[in-house]
Image 1 (cartoon, rainbow, N blue to C red):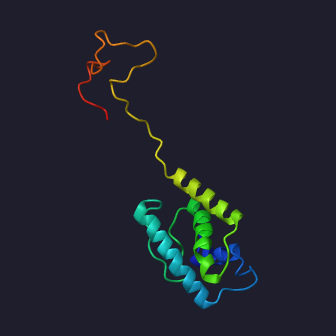
Image 2 (image 1 turned 180 degrees about the vertical axis):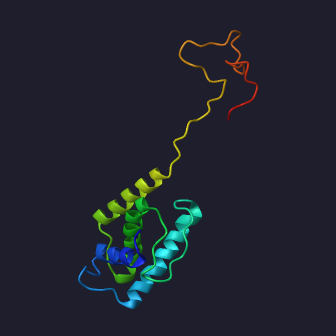
Image 3 (image 1 turned 45 degrees about the vertical axis):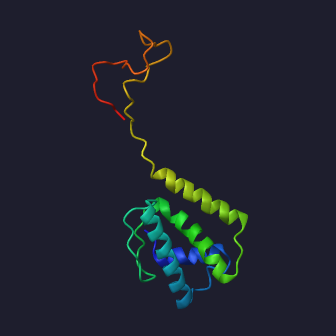
Length: 145
């Protein structure tokens, strides 16, 4: 699990405000923590991530899944850029978008779907009296959708 300090430091590096050799100031760290908390609470509200709790200290562990860390870093960098008069480049925007798509796809449920019994099994199935509301499987009296 990544700490908030690591995530904020990486986000600042992405927009070119800091380098790995220069430590964050306390003000920069607190600004990054506030914005990261705001972003992750928004994501929690709309269901992108589940069960996020606010982090108050830079050394606290961020309670998100491992596959969400990259999306958090790149999207936090985009949120921090205007405050530090930095432009978001096409590469950073593409990384943020791509990691967000991967994060959204990782939360998609691919379970089996119950098809309705009015759905034909294959080509050539026809209703005997050309009725559109007849069931192909009359033994099932409940709708599956």
